[in-house]
Image (tube, rainbow, N blue to C red; front, side):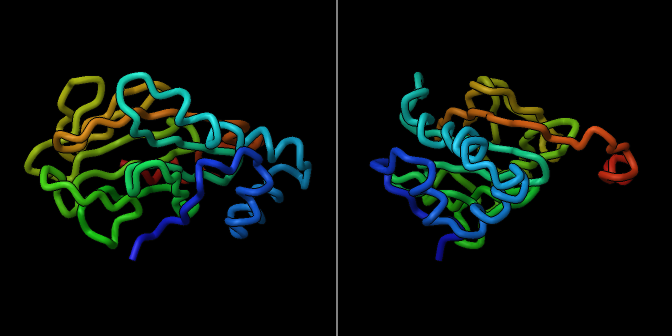
Length: 186
């Protein structure tokens, strides 16, 4: 059983996407002060991600808005975008317990993790996989975080995917390092 919610790529309107993902809808509405235009702006990158692909047709679209961060990807089923649960980290691997389960023999059961930190943004770390995790054709060291940028090319095993980022207002203006746990991070 997958941990994601399927969305047909034929859904071209942000509000249709929100109706199919009520938890995401509730959190985004709260983060956007119930401004539907602002919510639509946050959701729009999900609808545009397939058009942005230049190297491969596979993508992960990362979105953060305030305290809300989630991913959308077509890695799970071709031509279907799926939204992960809202979180600060998402496992990638062959295991169905992963947020992004990928059934490919070059992918380990628990291959890598994509995470989000309010100051650093999105990152990826390899979890000691046999075939490695690569960012922009450079292998990353196991267990070390590699910051991800919009347009990065990620390779999990031999499977390539484009990574896109859209973020708005990641931190409240009055937040400091103790408020968000920066002092506790490795």
